[in-house]
Each structure stands twice: as C-alpha cells, then as structure tokens.
Amino acid sequence: MSTGALILTAGFALLVVLGFPFAIAIAAASALFLVVVDMEPAFLAQQIIAGSQSFSLLAIPLFMLAGEMMSAGGLSQRLVDVAGVFVRHRVGGLAMVAVLAGLIFSAISGSAPATTAAIGAILIPAMVKHGYDKAFATSIAVSAGVLGPLIPPSIAFVIWGIVAEQSIGRLFLSGIVPGLAIALGLLVVCYAHAARNKVPRMDKANPQEMLQAITRGKWALLSPVVVLGGIYGGAFTPTEAAAVSCVYALLVGLFVERQLKLIDLPRMLLGAARTSGLVIAIIAVSTAFGVLIAQEQIAVQFATWLADQVQEKWVALAGLNIAFFLLAAVMDEIAIMVILGPMLMAIANKFGLDPIHFGSIIVTNVSIGMAAPPIGYCLFVGMAISGISLGKLSKAIWPQILVMLVVLFLTTYIPEFALMFQPASR
Image (tube, rainbow, N blue to C red):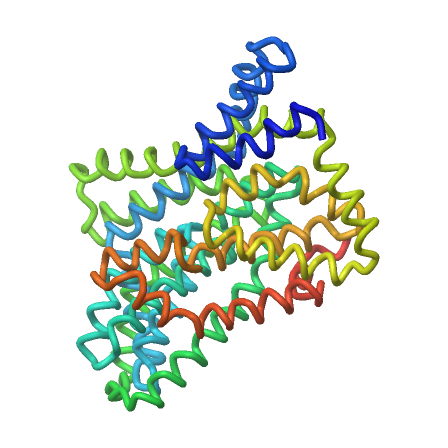
C-alpha cells in the first residue's frame, strides 16, 4: 500500500479514534495527502465546493424542516390519534399505535431522529402511564424511528442516490417492503411484550370516535399522498417535493391546525440548518476524499481482493452486512455511506448486484444502525425523552434489533423485497 493510501485509510481512522468530528477527520486526511504527494492544495477547496452544489442535497434541510414544522404544528398528534382508534384496544395496542404512527410520520419527515422525537414525545409518557415498562416504551419509539430512512421520502436514500449516482425515485421505492416488514415485526414484538407482562388493554374506539379522528387527521394523512403522488406522478422531483412538504406543513400548521406560531419559525429553521449542516459538511469534504480514494484505486483493489478471496456472492453479502452492522454501531451512518460509498459500489459491480437492490441493502443497514447500541442517533433521542440510561435501553431494544436483522437478511437474499415496486421497464 502506498504512502498516500495509508494516509487516507489509517490516518483517517486514527483521527476518528482520537475523537475528531468526521468532517474534520476527512478534511484533515485529505489535506495531509495533498501535502505528502505534492498536489495543488486548491484541489481540496474545489472539491468541497463541487460536493456541496448538488441540487439533490437541498432535499436534506427541506425534509428536516418539514418534519419539525409538522411536529410543532400538531400533525404528529393527529397521526397518533388516527392510529389509536384502530389498534389501541388490542393486546399491546398502545405500543402498536407508536409503530403505526411512526410508519405514517416516516412518510412525512424522511428522518429517523425526527420520527423518534415526534412519536416518542407523545407516546412514551402515555405508554408508561398505561402500564408499559419505561425502557420498553422508549425502545418501541426508537424502533419506530428506524422506519424514517426506509419509508419514502427518505433522507438516507437521497444521500445514497447522490453517492452512488442512482435514481432517487427508484431508491425510494426500494425501501417500501423492508420498511413495512420491519413495522409488521415490531407489531408482533408489541403483542408479545404486552401479553407476557399482562399490560392492561384500552377501551375500543366506537365508530363516532373513529370518524372524528380520521376527520381531524385528514390533513396529516394527506401529506404523504401529496408528496409521493407528486414525485411518482411526475409533478416534481424529490428535491422539489421536500420544498412542497415545507409549504404544506407551514400552511396546515398556521391556518388549519393553528398550533404553529410564526415566532417558532426561527428556532425550527436554526434546528434544521444545524442538523443538515453537519450532514452536508460530511458529504462536501467526502467528495475530495472519494476522488483521492479513486485515484489511489483503494476501492478497486479491495473489491478485486474480495472477489479473489470470496467466490460466492451470498458469502460476500453476508460479510458486508456483518461489517456494516458493526460499523454502524460505533460510527456515524451518513459518514459510512459517503466515505465507503465508492468501495461499496465497486464491490457491488464486481459481484453483479443490481444497484437499486444494493442501495436498499445499504439503507436498511443504515436504518438499523440508527437504533443499534452504543451510538445510534435514535437511542439518544429516546433517552432524552424518557430519561433512562443507555444500558437499560440497549437491553430492552434487542428483540426489535433481531426483527430488523431478519428483515435485512430477507432484503439481502430476496431481491424482490427491494424491487417489488420498481417500474416495469427495469
């Protein structure tokens, strides 16, 4: 391995271990490479600018802002109410409400932490009040957040579409079946927990309550229809759909629900800018990093080595899933996709994998990482809401993690899981 390759791999890894933020570690490793190999330093600035100018990147802050406005505007409460009238009376019903509400909210926000925050703030206290263990209640809200990156529209699929240069619309479709399968598995976990712990059942909603909940929640339920219908109806692109989501959330929050206040907008704008700024900073500096990785042929060499060592595609996929799960448990999920993207695509090409199917595998892995101990983002959102320790939450969430791993296995080895809703002209 050349000196440059060592700087880009071992040097970057050392900076991360020392505690440097990912964006700074990537930029520092790239800058050191340029100095050592005597390349023009302006290359780094040029690539950062190029990496931050993709039109598709606008979808990230816009979807984050839309999620914040919908939560503040009362739409998340409406979704909880709609889900509640249908399943709250069943064994584990209130926990099931969290899963179903998370499923619908995911089609609005596209973000795992936003989904966990919106659903958890309402339902974790409610579940505890009705007899659920606090750690389990938190783990269900965290697990419901995992649906955010899978159910379209999805910020994770936007990022992977940019990295892998694939159709974001087709990638959105590839997350539907894995997302629904995880939701179904979580419903089973809710039932089993409530039955085992004899959690009291709630009263069944009467037809009048159902009608009222649906009527009040119609604007929340209409949001995914507007956004996804516009994308797949050809009215607008995924990035434009993110802008439409913001306008829709603003108008409904201000003039229909009337829970959103203009005075709150600066705070929400700042929150969305802060979160998306971290994401886009990683993507921008990773553009230069990726070019240098390609120049040193690290990804190609690794893919060739893997193909020589592993002859069977299923073995290579199993190894990638294991490595991805371990990495996602200790590393930022977005950084994994952006930094390892070129290497992962080289491996996919070597084994002849469908790029959309492969994207679904990657994002399913990323989604699980959002809830996997010890540093999954959604874990800390749940802990902030409930106040429980990481140890208690990590112990409670493993049944849900196992459900997700089963779905990952199915997504990996049954391509139809990802490709079921793809256009017929594939």
